[in-house]
Length: 169
Image (cartoon, rainbow, N blue to C red; front, side, top):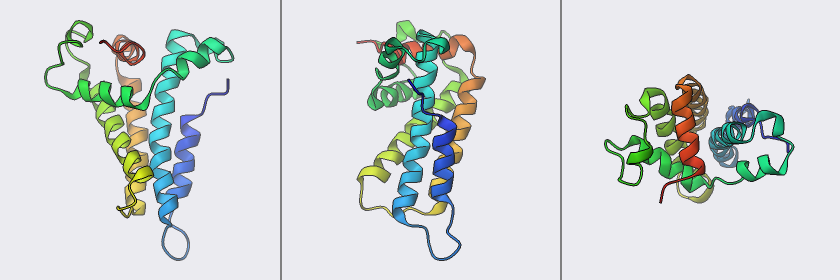
């Protein structure tokens, strides 16, 4: 399986968000840039998940693909919302780290939720008009989120990835 490179998705977003030499940016380009920024974060998360549970050396296997494809966008969104709550809901309490997820993963979760919402508006809502600045902000948010995830403690990232793969019922 060829894993989509989050950096390539973010580079694509940057090309789409760049102002043209003459005239104004097309809405289709700005919308796709916002969408690509979210997908960069989403595929980064899926790669971290499958690497953790199956292993980097197993990327060509069907098992890796199964884990990679197991997460729905709403599951990521819902977990990110749960992390941002002042008190986790009852079903999450037994699985949350004793001291919470910390500022790095909290920031990642807030950015992931924000980008999810922006991507939905960009992809499905014909009303809003986007500016280059909107797309550039989405790209910066995605890049910062990936960095924050990497700064979180390993055990905290593992709890997050486990909850992503196995959401409590």
